[in-house]
Image (cartoon, rainbow, N blue to C red):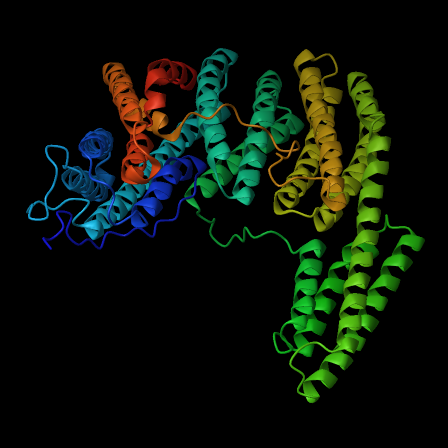
Length: 611
C-alpha cells in the first residue's frame, strides 16, 4: 500500500479547552472523526457516490484553507504567537490537503490496479488526516483564545491608567472630561468580561468573574459621587477616606478579573475556597460509604480524623454570640452522636478486617447507615440555623432604620447622632458578615460558596463607607453632593440585601434538591449576549472590507454545502458515511451560518465596544 499523503505527525493534541465556544466549535469535528475511524472498509463505489465524495473532499479543503487564512492573519498581528500559530496552520492545511487527495475519487471508477491512494485504499491515511485536522484546528482556536485574554488585559490596563488620572484630578472640569473617557473604557471592559464570563466552562471561575464584575458595576457610581464629594470638600478627611476605599476596591476587582482569565495568583495569596462544612460532610460520607466495596480503602484513624475536622468547623456556629443556647446544644448533641456512631463503625470495621472479610459485614452496614444518617442530621440542623438567622436578619434590615437615621442625622449636622447610629450599623454589619460565613458552610455548591464570600466582603466594605459618607454629610449638612453620595452607598447596601435574599432562596433550593444542574444562579450578575468566539477574533483583527469578504465566503460555502446536501440525500445510508461526515467537517470549521450575519454583528459589536 502506498504511503499516506499526510505522513506521520507528533502534533500535540492534548490541549486543555477552557471555553464553551472552542468546545462547541469542536464537537461536530470530534463526532465526525469518531465516525471516520469506524467507517465501513468497503463502501459501494457507484459513479454518483464517488462524485459526491470528491465534491465534499474539495469543500473540506477549501474550508480549511479559509480557516487557516484567518489564523495566519492573527499570527501576523500577534508576533508572540507567530511560530505556534504558523505551525498549527501548517498542520491544518496539510491535513485538509490530505483529505482532499484521499477523496479525489470522482473522475472515474477505481479498479483494483488503480495506483492512486484514496479513502478506499488507505483507510489509515484518512484516520491520520482527520486526527491531525482535529488537533491542529484545536491548537489554532486555543491560541486565538489567547488574543481574547490579551484584549481583556489591554482593556484593563487602559482602565487602570484612567483610574489613576481620576484619582489625581483637582478640578471639576478635568474630572468630567476624564470620567467620560473612563466610562467608555469601562463599557468596553464590561462587554469583554461579560462575554468571557459566559464562555468559561469552570463554574467556580464563572462565579468569581461574576462577583468581580458586580463590584466594578456598583463601584462605578460610588466612584463618581465619592470623587465629586472630595472635590467639593477637599479638606474633609472622611470624604477622602470614602473615596480612597472605592478606588482600592475597584483596583482589587480589576486584578481579580485578570487573575481569573490568566489563571495567575497574587504573590503569597491563597485563592482556594475556605473549607466548608458541606464539603467536609460530603467527603466524610464518601470515605465511609467506600468501605462497602473495599475495607482497606481508608484507615480507622483517617476516618476519625475527618470527623474531628468536620466537628471543628461547626465551631463557627457554636462559638457565635448570635447562636441561641438551644441551637448550640442541638449542634453539640449531634456532633457527639456522630462521634458515637463513627466509633461503632470503627469497631465493626476492625472486627471485619480481623476476620479477613472481603466486604462489609452486616454490622458494618448498619454502622455505615447510622453514621451517614447522623452527619446528615447535623447538616440539616446547621442549615436550619444559618438560613433561619439570615431570614431573621433580612426581616430586621428590611425596615432600613439605621440607614434612615444616619441620613437624617447627617442632614441635620448632628455628629453625635451619626456616631450613635454608626455603632448600630456596625453591629448589624458584623451580624451580616458572620451570617454570610455560616451560609457559605451550608451553601451546597462552589458557585454559591463564592457568592456567599462576595456578599460577606461587600457588607464588610460598604458598612464603613456608609459611615464615612454620613460623617461627611454631618460636617457639611448643606452639601447636595455629600447627600447624594450617602444615598448611593445606602442604595448599594440595600441592593446587597436583595441579593442576599435571592442567595438564600437558591441555597434552600439546593438543599431541598429543587435545583437542576443547568439552571443559572440568579444571585450572580448576568453578562450580556456573547458573540461567537471566531466572530470576536475576526472583529478584532480584520478591517470592515475584510469582514465583508469573510461574509461573502461564508455565503459561498453555505451554497456549496447546500449543493453537497442535495448530492448526499440521493444515496442509501450504507453508501455515504464518509460523505456525510466530511460535510460535517466542512461546516465545523467555517461556521458558514455565521457568515451570513457576520457583518452586522461585527459592526454592532465594534460600536458597542469602542473599536
